[in-house]
Image (cartoon, rainbow, N blue to C red; front, side, top):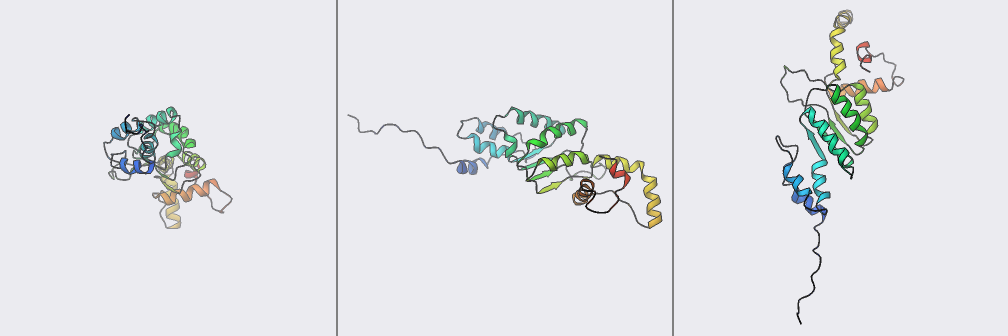
Length: 215
């Protein structure tokens, strides 16, 4: 008779320990990374998938506008509703076309757990005009993400374009009141304008016609 004890099922490593190990793999925050290693790890077995998925989905960086469409396809194909895992979402592209706005409108309601959103790459040449999403797109985002605590976006694109049309009016006002009317260039200013737009009765302030036209 053999003295060997019967084979027992191997004990799984805790998810927290797996996450510590998987942190050594590159992710989307690294330039040129396609997360190939961590994606392969997520397919090893079901026990590894939660830890690997958290590594992939917690902090997502999209470096091209076409990557937004691919990301949405991945979200829709996931039975586990991976979008709710996303805590930080960064768009490192600086051109918001009609398709990007449409894709973002689909994605925003799925990001219920998002806490930080970056809507453009500020590390660009000064010769390039940094244009952010429309005010309506930002409003949709704010209403869809209840846990959002940090929003970093350039000035809305329509606002920047309308400034050229209203340039004569701005110059006239500047000459009359002896000050300059500059477009909002910081996320804080954009948020203030958005607050005034969404709650017109909160402050008795008249918004510039060029800003109201962006809605």
